Length: 137
Image (cartoon, rainbow, N blue to C red; front, top):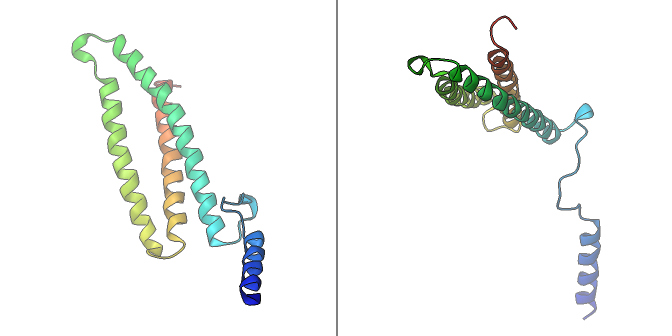
């Protein structure tokens, strides 16, 4: 009976000392572990993706505006934009998977993939902005 009580008390202490099930906030200015570097790289990608999505809406509207000013037989900017974006997403994903092979199966692979995704996504955002701004802007 005493040993059962002892084990129960030990279990309660372990539960109190156990970390919370939620993720800790990572200081990305001072990421020291691979886990933290992976998390920060993923945050960079998520931020780049949010910027891309915001720019996409603007560029999509700009291409719709271009189409609205053209004769029916000349329209197609919106369609070309969508086709280009779909092709770009396939390229980005395949390219970044390939870059991850530099550390395939290792703990660094997610950081390499996320870093690639962020870099290519930022570059695409600039391309979309240039399209929306039009020639000479």
